[in-house]
Length: 152
Image 1 (cartoon, rainbow, N blue to C red):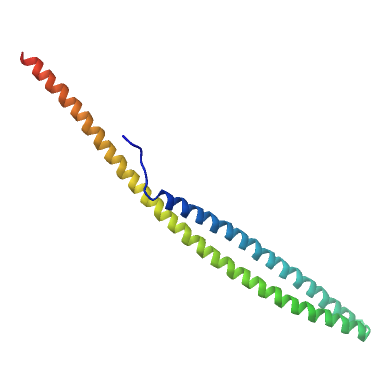
Image 2: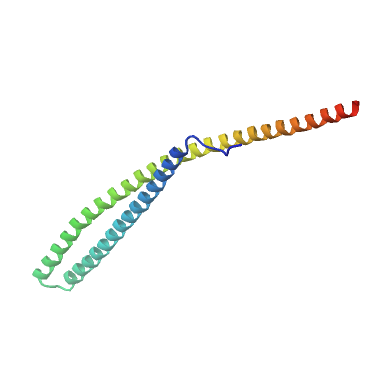
């Protein structure tokens, strides 16, 4: 009696490896998106502080040159925020796409796992039938020997 052998075992391993690879990609994309969000928040905080400084200097009647310098800094921050915001959006889109790819890989692996489980259950039932047939054969042989021995 041989052990269970799943003919698609290599495919199962490949799908499992693909799923694990996709999971690592999701983790990487999530870190990238989190980093982009944090950078955007940090820049927006710096912009808010600079804006408060402009208001303070303007309200206190500060020098025109100082105000112009602060406004220039604000403009550069706004531009940089737009670039970072764009990167964040791309990172979030990449994250969504990698999650979709991971979900597809997970489903493909689960499908092959289900097929394996069904085939294993079928194999076990067949083994039980074979064992039952062998047990029945032994019992029948013993019964026949007993019947032949009892006739003499």
